[in-house]
Each structure stands twice: as structure tokens, then as C-alpha cells.
Length: 113
Image 1 (cartoon, one colour):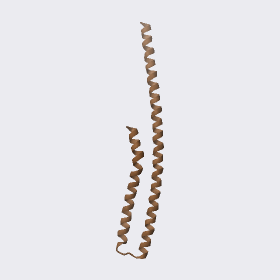
Image 2 (tube, one colour):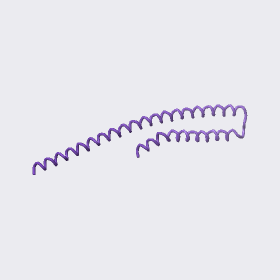
Image 3 (spheres, one colour):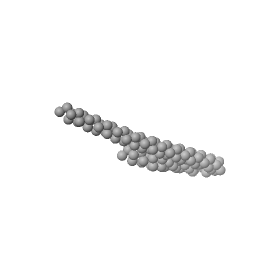
Image 4 (cartoon, helix red, strand yellow):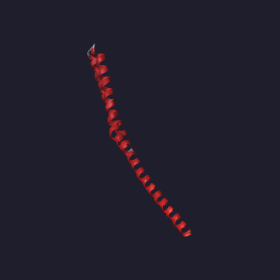
């Protein structure tokens, strides 16, 4: 169950963050267009172009951050998987030791009778 959650986060969270960043960027661009819609001139167009370039640059930075987060999640998933394997091995050892202890006690009781 927890492995599926981690896999979902690893696969879907970066895409979700990128999608939200794109939506927010779209609203920012639309807001900028509405601001300049009434008075379009060369100065405003240059400013809009500059703002668009800044938005694109910011989007690229966010995409890069998402990739870094995705890589970190993949690494955490592997660490978690290794810990689960180790935990299962320790649980098996504990179960085996418990079984052996129970068998020894049973043998001692049989010898005592």
C-alpha cells in the first residue's frame, strides 16, 4: 500500500506541480494582456515581451526544480524499498528466533515430565 502511494507521488506529483505552475503562469499572462489591452503601444508591447520572457524563464526554472524533486522522490522510494526489505528480513529472523525459543521450551517441558 505505502509503496503504491510513494510510486504515485513519484510519478504524478512533479507533473501536478508543473501543471499548476503552467496554470498560474497562464493567469498571470492573461492578466498582463488584459492590463495592456486598452492601450497598446510600442512601449507596452516591449514590456509585455519582457514579461513573457521572464515568465518563460521562471517556468523553465520550475520545470528544473520539479525534475530535481522527482529525482529526490525516486531516491527516497529506493531508500524506503531497501528499508522495507531489511525490515522484512529482520522480522523473519525474529519470527525464526521466536519459533526456535518456543521449540526449546517445549522440549525442556517434555524432558521435565
